[in-house]
Length: 310
Figure 1 (spheres, rainbow, N blue to C red):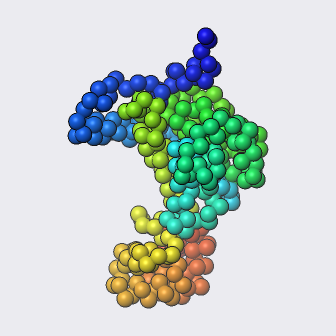
Figure 2 (figure 1 turned 90 degrees about the vertical axis):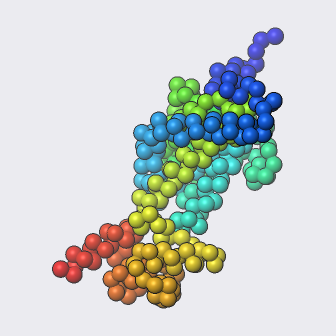
């Protein structure tokens, strides 16, 4: 019997290979298993380090899209899809960003987030259909995520995005030479065969999560959403985040708790404005004017204010 085409595609992929280091994992002690998994996980950061030039290109593409009102839309299946949705869901509370800016599409829809819908990844036409629902334009970025690189659902979405004029990024965990779809940037952290053959929720999933974190964090920093190394556009939708906001104001301005609370209230909960008001003595309206004139960057606003004081 001739080998199936999909079988042939998978046969040469690193993520589908057997790991010689874990061949006896089924008879190891608990501690041996844990140590071996941890040892293999060390390869993830090293694999990502080799991809930094491509990650830089991709992060700049995303940052530029944000500046012109565009979005990044993640597309994936299984673990890859869940990671895209996860990153998208974490951006608004972290950066105070519009939920529309970063979105995730997963094969199989909402149900696939909590229960595996494995067959959905083979539906290329569904990837196209789901993407079209997002009304993609040339302002947007579509980022496909697929450990193996061959997921039809993701390929369909990337090909359609290209036709629509959007920028495209592909995050896979196999060598660049296996990429068979035309994209603007391919990010290919090859972390080696999985501890359990083909279980790409492990090293490949960790690598994908790290790459997505880097992409959106870098792009958000370049939108002025970080001051020094602190979140200054966080949403105060819990008591923890309210208190975190006060701590950030204290650290940024050397004010005490009561003073930080005062400025947070005076700024109507806008941490950026509170920081600028506390440092400069400006009222809220003027502080917002300085921020708006400097693309939301506190440091740039402070430079302008100081120049005007001379």
